[in-house]
Image (cartoon, rainbow, N blue to C red):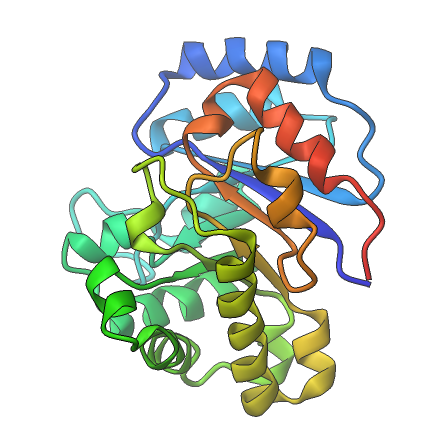
Length: 254
């Protein structure tokens, strides 16, 4: 049984004091979540505030990036063991905004390996641009991203991962893939995992959709058989909107 996962990606938003205020509002209105895990991925400067604020709650804390080296002269970077020691459980890797800054598939693979080696759960993002979709190469592009991103990762470790499909053309644009478009790609992602790791692993792995999912469209997107949750941007910054998405995800699943 795949549990639904709703992960907020705050991007570069909120100070530590704003994080504390958000947590207080959010916890006060959060329903019981039997079928849904909740993650809040915050800027590094907010990690300690988030960990304190969500302590003894059902909400896990994640980071938005990690560096692949263990330590050294890498000014401004954060190592995986630092995140773990800070109280992180999850980390977003390969987000399109990071890729747009020059992050390669090989970089993503190195970061995934570092995260897994340190006991973090990677949320590895894949997705196509509008030009790639219009050229009809969405499946080929995403297959390449998955195969390269998961290089040298065995069956024992893939089970500890999450994959997020985020069509670049639908991030922060207000445009959303239709439930059918999103399902088609998520189904393809599961098929790629099946070819690489077998049917049992493919059935077990959680695949999230991230692309302007909000409180209005969440239920229809999350009703699709291969969409196991959401990677939520703007709507995760507003407690009332985030809770609505969680309520849509908190349904019995396969």
